[in-house]
Length: 293
Length: 120
Image (cartoon, rainbow over all chains, first blue to last red; front, side, top):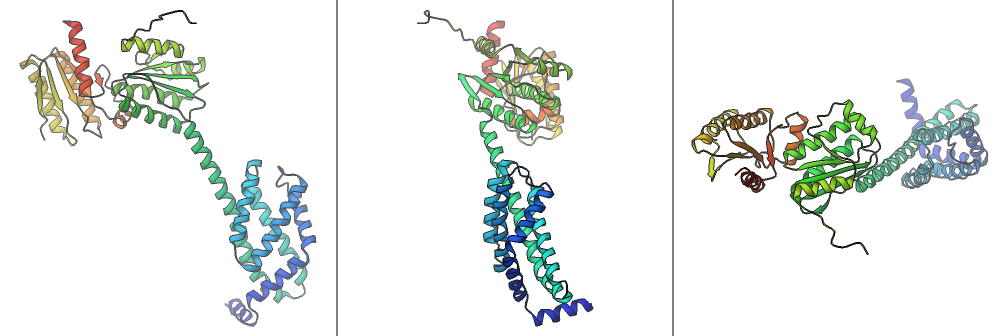
């Protein structure tokens, strides 16, 4: 209680903005030395190992200046924009969240140390300066960390979207015959999406036969393999026959391990064979009319 | 709500409504099994297009219907299962093995016509 009263009193005698101004002046004055110290601490703690010393120094300079500016103006928009910009540049180089948070906290420590050193003879003044400094510094650290994380999430979202767009098309190659070529790794989410797409495709194209080609899938885990079997069964409920082609030995092994009922799975070695069988099922007969020219 | 059973040539057609109680389903089963012999029908089509949810009782009844119909000398085709319903059923292990399925009523009739042609 007593401490609180004291704070209020001190606040009256000297406005926090006054203290902040003094603080900013101090940080400007010792810019070179403090920045130097900060960079040393960053290298010591082995943060930002993905960047060269010169790069760290260059970034440190601009971060330091934005930091001091944010302290001075108490406006965080510029810092926010800078943090986003910085994140955009360093995320592709593999800089992790803990590193960004780490360096901001280091700067906070370095500056606090310098304040301790400067005001060590005037304990009351030190207290007041820290009262002004700490909330602002915390807010800066927060702003930078949040900016970084947001940028990261944006990148991740973008990549997920790209993957989803690359994800498999359902193609009609003949009337009532669909082909679903699957390439790459299938995780449960993609598997679910594929199934939805396929079942909807069967309905809209009124397909009777579907060829799922998994030549481009090297391996699948038990969950996804089960999902594939379920997709085949669900397609049958919609009245479509599924032919699976291009099973790799590993996938064949997985399917045997989970004990797939082979009576339900129609498999053919390669895509060509699958399409030929589908044509037979649909009553097509493909004939060559002349030798290729 | 009782399910109407329509006679179309040698085929009986039963169309499910969205909300069917277990009692309705039981009644449908009894009705179909009786009428398939009375009308000397060769096949039964059960249209479930309107059902956007299918519980385990409904799909078990569907399987029972088709097996009983077969014992009475006719064939069953389930038509119009919605994509979402199909996948949900499979995940619950309700795959209606041994029961013919088709995309919609038209497909079901086409399938049966084809079949009648070959057996005649």
